[in-house]
Length: 226
Image 1 (cartoon, rainbow, N blue to C red):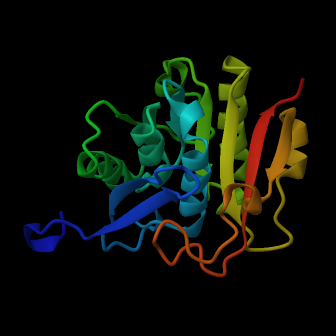
Image 2: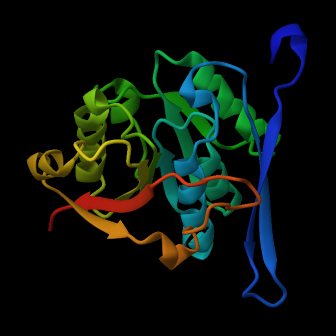
């Protein structure tokens, strides 16, 4: 809760499919906490990834999904609302983010979504005990360059354990000098870029919000090399 016991303010995101007859939509509510930690807010990458999930909602039902660095958990919440079996995770050193994961689940009536601590780059008991996975999610996990290898170490471990799984991730280009290409090669991972226009995310406003705005957001699907 906010200081004084008040509930944190929430943002509502409404994903629509007007091509259906009748049109269908999904609204989710995401609480945001007034805190300087960037895991407490919805960022542009999260809305883009959530849009990708929405457009693939019919394939998500029953799928086992893990979101890394979930923070306020918009993609994971959308996946769960679309029928996936979702586990949300964030760092063990960020308990407030884990609280936010739980808060987002409560706000959307998701009582069966697991929340656990996973620290990137560590082969922890929590990582080893994860069930079989079909999809791993990560929005803006490539934020700090010093974290890139730890993120991909964790992803590579999970993909080797679940060779048919994929890592769906969005990132915001903050410097032309930052690249994960060498790390993908090191961990024997392949990457396919997904153009935003192929899933209706090439707009400045999505899901009834002003995000992603004018930020340069990109979408990738990462898997093990065959």
